[in-house]
Length: 158
Image (tube, rainbow, N blue to C red):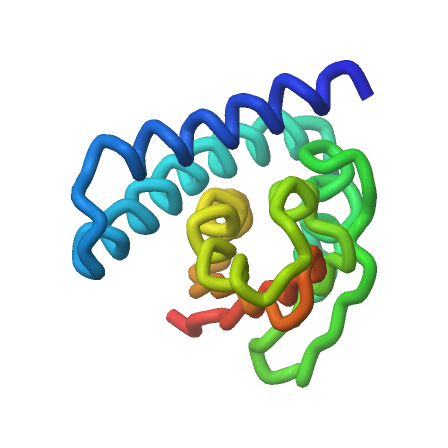
């Protein structure tokens, strides 16, 4: 619990710094989200290197996704993902019923528009981790009720 607070504080301050250093237009908002996603991508790459240095090779995509949902998510958020679904055709949905970065926002619908900037770093984390494991993907987040979130991972075949 002690190392969770600094991560939450750093994440919050990172978002505040990036969003306050720019204008509030739609194109600038998209740029800010992209910056946060890129930062998360790099952190995810480095973190997965450390986590997998002593593990055996994964058999397939499903094993990789299970590792992301259990070990990677536990390392970052101190809990496993709540639900993993797949269509067995390269699309995975990871559901977290209590995303810590969204928990600090109110549960009201007026805050749903703020959710993408709080989830961009996490999307980057997952995409960076998957890239380092040899899986090219697109990761998006969808929030319908706070603080629950569904992360959709679309695997891109090479």
